[in-house]
Length: 122
Image 1 (cartoon, rainbow, N blue to C red):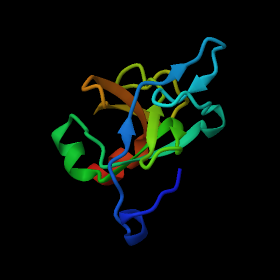
Image 2: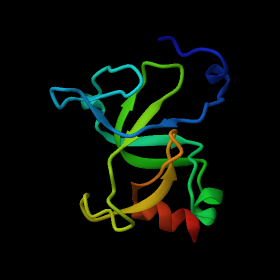
Image 3: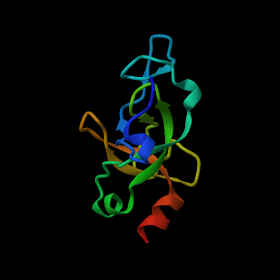
């Protein structure tokens, strides 16, 4: 799908944040369109994140997380990997978990580089 409109002028719509989804073959897919997104696994950017923690929400216009992305829509859909809590035990050292409100209004911990949090909050 073509990405035209306000993005040509530097305006970015908020990123839609969804829960990671797999198809019946256990392949990661976009929950909106079903397109395989496995090759997009890595660091992702979330524009205008809906962070629960007030201090973090004021500090971030853009959040880096780890997961998958589908760019087949007029807006990005990011599916962050589960962090498993504020310690982000599911990832290697250097990541922490922050609470983020997803498109379904559920709040979940997503992984964020620790240095991003310490540099933006202090």
